[in-house]
Length: 101
Image 1 (cartoon, helix red, strand yellow):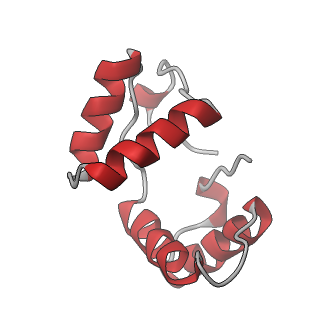
Image 2 (tube, helix red, strand yellow):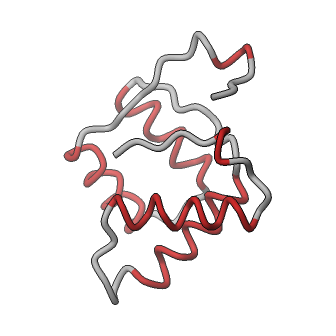
Image 3 (cartoon, one colour):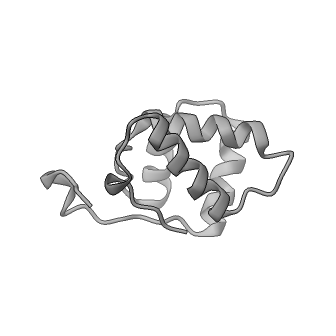
């Protein structure tokens, strides 16, 4: 997987389920931009969140989730498959994507 050179030294940050839940509650009660949420997380838990590599893919996947979240259970497997299909539609090489569950 190709990563730009400045990305190699960055530590990957994963929020705990409790932190994710708290972020969801905060987001539900505070309508802000994505960058404002990132800033809030960084200040609250002292973590640094990297910028998104493919914002157009994130937006498309977000729209999918918002459309289907109340209709079906969206498992990691379903989200990864949909992300791969969206990436193809956006001409993003699957070799540049990294998925984790």
